[in-house]
Length: 231
Image (cartoon, rainbow, N blue to C red):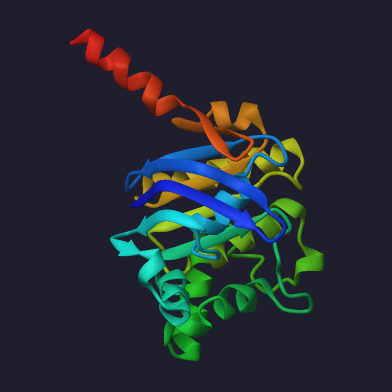
């Protein structure tokens, strides 16, 4: 699904956010990218989501060379293949949950009635069938995050990127959101969770640890030698 090869990212002023990162994420994985503030994980999110381009190195997503695509082609790729979930929800105030999700399909080419039908179906899927006519201020934090997840997956993306999806939630709501993300993964979606929460990361099948713009540990690499020794 995703391959990064010797990727660097340097910003104006000489600030290096990533320093030679190589990483492969297979289709259907559930992965945590974990690290403290300033470790480079947010820059990783931007590169994985095609929101930014590397300074050097290669990024391939679902068979596409990101460096070879135009801005318009990258926008089309994001719209069709990637869903985003952010800590702060980013829902439109004064707009119902149904409209928030349906508006996420504006660039899909679907007619208005079909966008609303799909939005209603995915809101039922995340347990908000009875809350779809409520506006964000009428919903709890956990409910707002589920609306945000519904919006992210309404178009059936192959890849879901979640940036600190439980960071603004209490523990009960956070657990409910993680159950939902696991269910989406079980249905075939590749899910990458960006987090500073080591406990959350440890609960997932694979953890990629970052520090100072580099990958310092990958649980998949640790498991591979052990599997070879057991044979």
